[in-house]
Amino acid sequence: MTNTASKSYGAHEEIIICQDVHKWYGEFEALKGVSLTVKQGEVVVILGPSGSGKSTFIRCLNRLEEHQEGEIVIDGIPLTHDVRNIAEIRREVGMVFQQFNLFPHLTVLENVTLAPIHVRKWPKDKAVERAMHWLNRVGIPEQAHKYPGQLSGGQQQRVAIARTLTMEPNILLFDEPTSALDPEMIKEVLDVMRDLAQTGYTILAVTHEMGFARTVADRVIFMDAGQIVEENTPAVFFTNPENERTRLFLNQILHH
Image 1 (cartoon, rainbow, N blue to C red):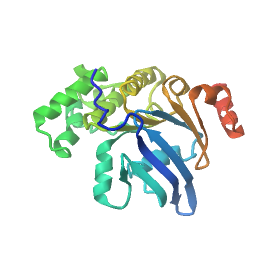
Image 2 (spheres, one colour):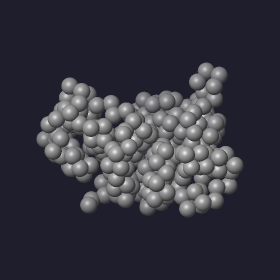
Image 3 (cartoon, rainbow, N blue to C red):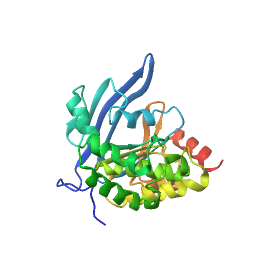
């Protein structure tokens, strides 16, 4: 299995650096000074109650949301108002959302090849070859010529992941990718994410899937009220959390 994610930098180079990041929506401060450093190839799971700022935070990393204060540097590129920097960062960073955002009138293959052809300017045959490679990797090559409406939710989310991977990002952001799925479809999407985590991608995932956080994450981060409250290895985080808010959250999630 080739590791398309590894480039020529040091094995532990810091690929995401956030320092004192603030974000407001009018009077409401959604992020209150978030600082986080992620190394190349690290898998970080972000947990937290609804409204804690976790989705806002990862959406700031590829400028889907704009932070007002603090610094964000992605793979050596500062995230500023400069549109060239934003475009460069978006080439490095792939994002998978809760909603699949597939075009219903295009086939699976057309959905996956659209951006490589129009954004990366690849010839069609190259785009199709890479798209089929990734549809194969996420386990649904036979769905290539169907339309999204003919697929299950789990299959659609796997198409969305293949679409992201075809653009050859180094960093993958997942924003609650299983929360819109029926329970029996969640495992198939988490299996794909597990596979990617073992392939050397740098992954930041906002999820409520505790099993995934325990077994796949290098580090678990707990956010509450716009701040990082706690971060640790899964072993320590789940068995011996330091912060009272973390303990309350885990009790609610794990025992309900």
